[in-house]
Structures are given as C-alpha cells and as structure tokens.
Picture 1 (spheres, rainbow over the protein chains, first blue to last red):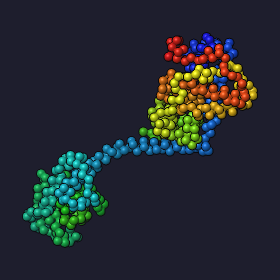
Picture 2 (picture 1 turned 90 degrees about the horizontal axis):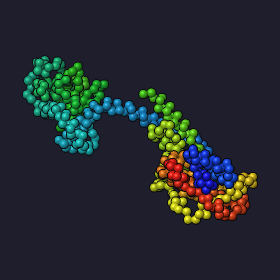
Picture 3 (picture 1 turned 90 degrees about the vertical axis):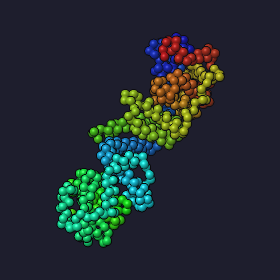
Picture 4 (picture 1 turned 60 degrees about the vertical axis):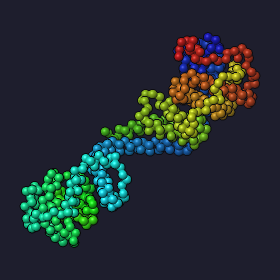
Length: 285
Length: 216
C-alpha cells in the first residue's frame, strides 16, 4: 500500500470505520513509514484537540445541572399526571355516559322548549343556548316519549278535566286504575285547598290527577307508576331537602317529579318557580 | 397498573439523559456559539427526550438519539429549513488549498515548544470550528466529540454516509490548514508549501477505496 492510499484511508482508519482487512493494510504501512506515522499522530492529536477544546468551551453556568434535573423532574411529574388522568378518565367517561345522555336530553328538551316558548328564560340556562341540533336531534327523537308525557301532563294542568272525585277521602277509588297506593298529599301546610281528582291517561298508563290551589294558583299533583312512566328522563336532577327530585319547565309551568318506593309523584304549578314545585313534591308525602 | 412502575422507569431514563448532559452541552455550545442558548438547547433536548421516551428504541445509541433531537431542536429554534452548509460543499478549486501538510511540519508541531503553545493552537481550532457552516461543524462534533459512527452521524444529520465522509474530510482539512497557518504565525514551523512528491499523495475518497474492495 502506498503513502497516497494510506493517507486516503487515514480518516476512516482513525474513525474506526475501515473494514478489518483495510485496518491491517494501513497498520502495516504505518509501522514502516515515518511520514505516514507522523501524519497519523497529527490526525489523532487534531481529533483530541477538537474534543478537548469543545469540552473546554462548554463550561456550564452555575446551577445548570440542577436546572436540567429540575426541568426533567417537572416534565416527569407532568407525564405521570397526564398518565394518571388519562387512564381513569376512560372509565370515568363511560360512567359519565348516562349523565351525558341525560344532559343531551335536557339540551334537546331546552331547545324544544325555546322553540315553543320563544324567548322565555329557561330554568336550565340563564343564557339562550347556542343551537346544536346535530347531537341534540337524535337524542330528542329517542326521548320523545317522555316529552310527550310531559306535554300531556302540562296540558292536563292547563286544561283541567272534570273531577271524578270531589272528596279527598275518595282517593282510594283511583287506586285500581293508577295501580299504585294512593295517599292524601300533605299540602295543607302550604295552605292548599282541594279541588278534586281524576284518573288521566298518561302514555299507556293511568295517573291520578289531583287538583289543588295554593294562594289562588292551581297546583296539580300526579301520582303514577314510576316504572312505567319515564318522566324523569326529560327533567333535570336536583336535590331538595336531601331528596332527589327532577325538575323542569314547560310552557311556563314548572314541574317537579320525585320517585319513592316505585311510585312517581309529580307536581305542576304556575307559580313560575321550579323550587315551589320541587318544594311541594318533596314535602307532601 | 402499578403506579410506581412508570415513575421508576422515567426516573431511570432521566438519569440516563443526565449522564449525557455534558456531551450535549459541548455540542450545543459549539453549535449555538452562546452559552445561554446552548443550555436552553440542552434543556429542551432532554425534556423532549423524556416526553418522547416511548419512541426511543432500547438498546440503540441513546447519545445518537439525543443528538438528533438536539440538532432538530436547534434547527426548529431558529426556524431554519436546515443547517448552513453551502460554503464547504462543491469541488476544490485549488489542490494546494487541500491542506496537504508535510510530515516535517507535523513533526515540528509535536515539539516540546509547540506543546507549550498548544492552548493557543487549540483556541485556533475552536475559532475555526465556530467559523465553519453548522452542518459541517455538527458532523465533526459528532465524529470527534461524540465519537459516533459514520452511520449514526448520517442518521443524525440526515444525509448519506458518503456525504458524512466527504464533509468530515473537508472540515478536518480546513482545521489542519488553519492550524498550520496559526503555527506559522506564532513561529512553530517555518515550512513553506509542500514538496511536489508529497502533494502527489493527495487523499482520495474512501468510497473509491471501498468500491475497489467491494465494500459499501
């Protein structure tokens, strides 16, 4: 191998990139050629100098290592936080699904309500909702039945039927048709006066329709089989007096519903205050 | 899932990252030519690496991976389309500019007197490195400081191995030339232009040798 060839291979030789046979050739030459050996020493020195000067010029500022470790520590905590919030959120999301559905249903209901009541402030939202028909529409369609029930319920409140019974003590007579035990609601505490009761069709079921009046405001109490009348699906859950109730508003009437031992109780009022309906429904039994 | 497991894994990875801190800083300082920027660059690099831990292929060269992140971070930080490189590319106009240095010159630079002047010469190397285009600078740093293989350098920089080799050769030649000029300036060596027969030993490209030997 000539000096010329060896010089050409010197970079690769020193960088450890020369194939084994090339290494042997170069080493053989270097062991016998002073000039090439000198060149090799210089190249080695040059590489060493590049390394040395580069490290020498890279003196970190005070506390750099600490800052670096701190940045990594902070990033690690961020990553762990993300990881821990990611995995439970998956299960939380699935657990949230019914709630989200309920919320979407409520949204659909509110949109429906806004469309009909037009401009009337909704109890669900202080601000008018941005229309988002895409997600709301199918949900509304799926939940149309309870809404129809709610509509009917409000209809009976707005246009009361002729009472079948006029004595509160005769309430038990309604029981066979309604299918749930009938009790006299404790509405006297609110100064309510009894006006009469009926059995009304509610969906494919029957509900007891009990008419009262509080301070000249009609109050209707509905008693029904909670298993068969899915009223709460279109109402918003609340807690009043530590009891779960579902409240809503339709055509300016406030409605509150509550279930107890499988019996559904709903109250419709025109007191224009959902809490009054909720108040009644939670305290009357 | 055991909560302690990912934490321990991350902590172990952090330690590995920190063990390369001074190497990264050396390259970053030479690349950014500014300590504060270099430190930012290293910090960004290791934080990104920790975040991208899952992308690191265990068993491969962690340092090479980090240097790749560092290089990309450097480019992104300055919103460059790539590293500067045009100056040293292209054919050599003058064979003399190839930096062929006679053995006697090299020998004289090993003299005890020259050794005493080594810091001055090394400062010259530092200045020469700072002056060359970034892509060339990075390649020589990856080779000489980080001791990466040609393939690792090619992966890091994103160019073919042949390009790595030719650039490396050009940078070293340039450094040698600068070094000899400096040596002459400070009187270490008084040697003139190389003799004709030595010039004839102008290096040839390694790929030619490889092609001849049937290697890659």
